[in-house]
Image (cartoon, rainbow, N blue to C red):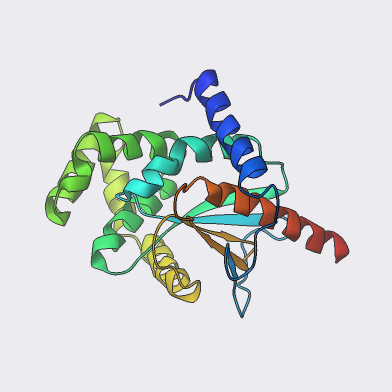
Length: 218
């Protein structure tokens, strides 16, 4: 799905309103608006500011955030690198992690991430049990002209298993309790504030600026 210019403008206005309204009189506070890890974690982007979204394909809150997130990503500078890590609390969540990493492995994640999210939440995929969900995903991918031999090989590959294992470790190390949750520079963790989940992007922007200043001092 292509986000229209008007939709982008609306989303950017929403982010601007939050930035000027929610935090006009104070900056985000550690321990309240975000938390710092006692032991900072390594990132995959040396010299850049890494932002990780811990998410789940079947999470309605992640899906609701997606339009504002798309607009937010479009305004980020080259020194910011964004990536998604699927949360894994058990086998139920591992299914979606394998889907994401298999699509990345065959070069289809960029093309299909948003259409897949739309399908899961608008065409009933989210309501299926795990076995039916896996079949539904396969049928949907086939309709998108995905090479299913390559996809199935990737789903069961050692490389994908290793990434799933790493995602489970990160879920635990970062203390993730729900989705969406953002992590900045392997150090700061931001969950969706009550009331308006889009404020997570405003807090993340603040932490990006903090991280940028820290990198400049090194």
